[in-house]
Length: 120
Image 1 (cartoon, one colour):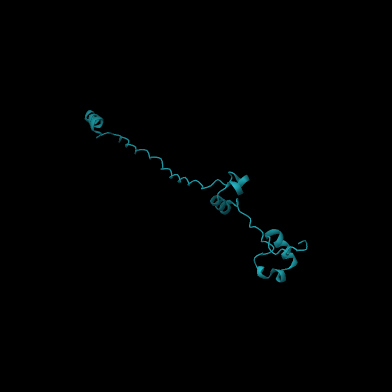
Image 2: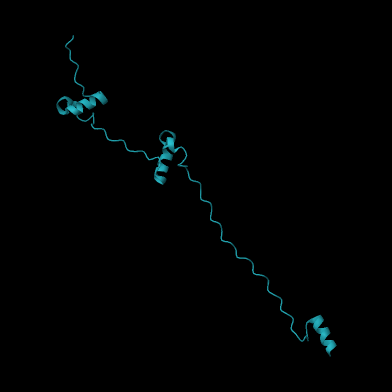
């Protein structure tokens, strides 16, 4: 009977003329965000700090690191000396040029002409 169908439909979901809507699936969770990359370790030196006085104010380690990683704090090679005042010193009077004698006498106190003993 219609009353029985109505009762069974209302209380058991059976005998209904229309099928009840299926239960909707649960919502899809949002995608998991990608992991944040790790924070890089801090740089060992701040090559901008104290750059105006780097030659006197930076440690040798900082000079080396900043030169290799940014071109700051690089020591310039000293120009070579024009003469080696130790080379050939045993025979300086006969073996050295006048220029080497003059330079070594002035800068290394070597190769200077002997002082004359005229006033003794």
